[in-house]
View (tube, protein in one colour):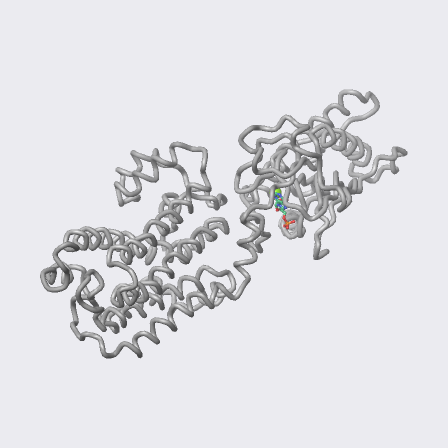
Length: 496
Ligand code: IMP
Ligand code: MG
């Protein structure tokens, strides 16, 4: 029998306990929090004990509301991962009711599914559901979906719709938390709710931020990091204006410096005697153009348009060096071959070394920045935090392409020495490399194994091989988890 019995007399509220906007949480130093998260949390919003008390009240209310007798069962559906603590405590407390009461009881069966709608703290539109295939058994059952938090409500609304397909007798939803969103957009109201909180991003008690913080007892407010600064950046005009300036600048240079040497080969850049070759100036516009593309490709706004165009994807992401043929090409080796003419004796060795370093850097950069990062975006495998670092990397790359001609001019005019000029240019490699490393280190700061992966990825250079499997004891791909290492990006890119 379902819930058609008379309403219980108990006065336990199924509506959420409202935490007002004015309450910013309790200071951390009153709580015993794990050391590894202290710097990342702002405050404790709901202490563990309060969560438990409220769940006990909800359990009691659910017990009173639902009249189900054997052989029927209340099918309790845990929405993993975030819902697991709430689920486990709620079930435990309903079990307690079952033990305590001698007049009646509530039989339960337990089910687990997994959804993922969140990438960092941005509500995304996509919802993936795992574990739904064998749920035909739900027909005519009483279902209680147990979820951690309802934000925009999209997850629950979608999920409920999915479950309705299996024609259960009743569907109820218990959510520990609902968020009082600033934009007031919420499309789902649960039947049972623990707390209504102000619009903060919260973690702990199985709620995560990129898989961190699940191992905290209390529900805490996450400290606002540089991430929010990045949010502002992401929506600003800098996204297109900065790389566009770079492109305009390189085109202007190509139109202005027409008097420069027409040598087709030696770029003249790795030299303290000659001027830049005109070819070097012109080919710079190719790289500025590629960079502009990458900036736009990594912006969610532009990406949604670009990714729909098969032509642009194929041409710029996969085959940019077909376009490259339209531009002139200079070679590092020509600048070395020309050493006696284009370098003074004291700087000859210096230029030899920095040219080799630059060559090595660009061999790496062409692959990992020019191609790899575009593939990553093509398969949409980067999470917002990684994109943040990719933008940092692009800033440095844009710096390198725009500053090169200027530095050479300063050197040529004698305002700075040739070595100073070159070392400033080389700083951009270090910065680029630094941001490249950050893309992953920041995501898995605590696993040493990840550092091993990082090194071996570069040593092996063939992550698909069995050799790589040996190093990484091949892990099954988990499509739900978007906080991946760069190695895993490679590894998880689906076959097309
Ligand atoms: P909705 O579809 O916008 O309601 O999002 C609900 C899902 O987003 C939840 O199941 C959580 O996994 C996640 N979520 C929403 N807000 C938070 C939060 O503040 N902390 C952690 N996860 C959250
Ligand atoms: Mg969830």
